[in-house]
Image 1 (cartoon, helix red, strand yellow):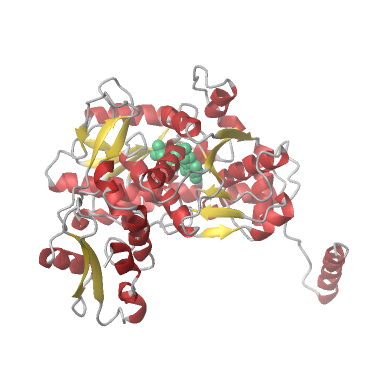
Image 2 (cartoon, helix red, strand yellow):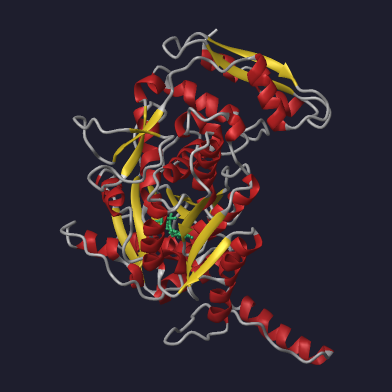
Length: 518
Ligand SMILES: Cc1ncc(COP(=O)(O)O)c(C=O)c1O
Ligand SMILES: N[C@@H](CCOP(=O)(O)O)C(=O)O
């Protein structure tokens, strides 16, 4: 029987029919060799009562050794070209190429290509909605494409990913005359941002390196708030010390309290994010602290799974546009890489056009794009409500330019008023987005107004963090407290005396105002 039909067979959805709390039956795809993709069987094991999912996976691996596949990955210089021979094992501690350039994780594509696009689609689909370790994670459900060589036992996961792809029906129709607008809610996640996707990969690899007795005492990052939250949570789950460098008074309270609560060593540094980034790079070169920012290409391997997930959620149909807010610029490349791998390995036949959206107060990529990609200049980023992307010297600038050039991409920007208005309008249709998503929505509004994005184009806006991390900006907006901003969509609470007549008066006024709109 062909692999794809086996995977589609009713036997391959064991969890819907079993009673997980008492006794589980696990089904595994087993390939005897990567060079013979047709030689795949499905075997099952029965879990004993009371044992946990990691134990079950461990026992399964002992009794059914992993197939002798050839999947592997290594570091190579980013965009090094076919003649480049420089490479490093993922078990080395290295962040830069010999020439000082960025690195990329390169997979053995020919080994992955031994399996068809439909094999991969079916395999990934078969893992959704289960609790099998580690595939219950949206990241590790694509393990073969992420870190193929890591033992499942070393993985540190909060079953991140599998985030909601929300059909923005009312927002699309009411504000943009669009019928097929979607918001990928990457911020509805373990620590409230897409950073969890990359951090599970990085911390898992650190866990492995520490077990190999590599000299790593802790893991560190510079952060505008979300990377530090994710790093500290995953490190805490694994019992690994984390050290975070935060720009003093430039991140939200909700973000600041996350690493504090998770037991990180928190340094509040009197500089901006770019200053913190410079410092952590210097420090990690001197001390046995592993660098967790997206300069480290391991992170992007996890983040790219959000792109694969979007395709999967559309039943492997490719959207026309994907809009991503950009700061340090790792994520826009991660999306490109995820989409590109799906095309290269035959899961889909094209990739979407990418849009990177920046705050006008922190827009070095936008300026570079507008100059026709002439020489890039870093800038001093100004304060923005989209504080997590207040970055003037993005480490992944080369990756972002590559992603945009190769996806026929566009860069847009949003002023403070535009991003706050977009956020308020989106919230008024039932979302509760962060200001960075407001930046992405502003890009969409501009591209719809100019006719670049058509009403029927299937468009995905990537929402990168949970709105609850940024309540202060919403409070200021709805109190109309922001200097030089009209706050056109503010919806302040109405103070009313505690008597029947007063309440009736304000309610009648409110209901009349609603009635006049019909
Ligand atoms: C909420 C949020 N959105 C967007 C971004 C931008 O992602 P990147 O730095 O990968 O461009 C960040 C971090 O930089 C972020 O924390
Ligand atoms: N927004 C980020 C900035 C750092 O980005 P990274 O992806 O390079 O870690 C944050 O939350 O710190």
